[in-house]
Image (cartoon, rainbow, N blue to C red; front, side, top):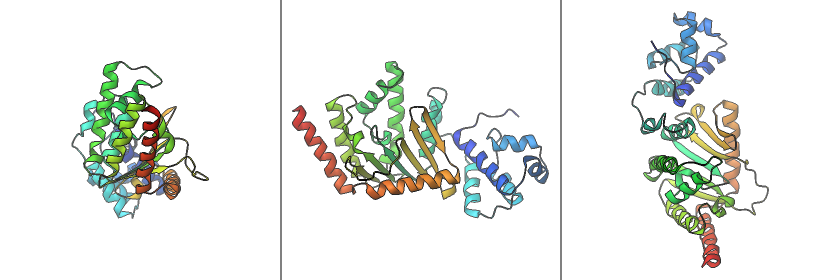
Length: 286
């Protein structure tokens, strides 16, 4: 059987199987002997290149003496997934990073983000997103910019439909950087206020004058899984997109988000703050 090119979610399932084996203190060959398979198959399952059925997953969990039934059930659910999601249409057309982000968001039970340099992608207008992509490090052709904007707007459906609760923590710097100029930013700020009124969206601003700001320097997204062990963090930096999912990393980022939430303005205060920035802009560019 030909080995597949695994998606991010398939790689995550494999990584959790490897973590389960390692916590049991087993080597790959030992687990293979318990399952009656080849060590090569264990390696292929753990790197996501070979599919794992829910039945096989539970067999592995039993062999590894994993007593965390909520985690095992959640992993069995992942193993049973077969239907292709909408973002698969873009595989081979877009780079892997934005598709990975859409996959994380599409399976999340709750989403949180913290952005410093720009408005979070899940709340960007088409004009703002176009300006962001057009000002990237590498110049893009118009059709490529349009493709990326279209993909970003499709990602927004899970938030705007109310399907997935979303907390957007936005630093004041992101509210003032004028991608596309004053008119584009003004429209974007108006859109933020409208989005903040959606029932499953919570928007909170971190002002410049926040004392002892505890946040990181990169833009972050935190996706809650069906159980805490399957949470995922995605971070943007000048070197690209990075995914974190180890228990220690998840604990660290949960603490980071907790500290940011503790100093951010309330929802109502945040709307008023955005309106005050819009008023400044209107006075300056009238």
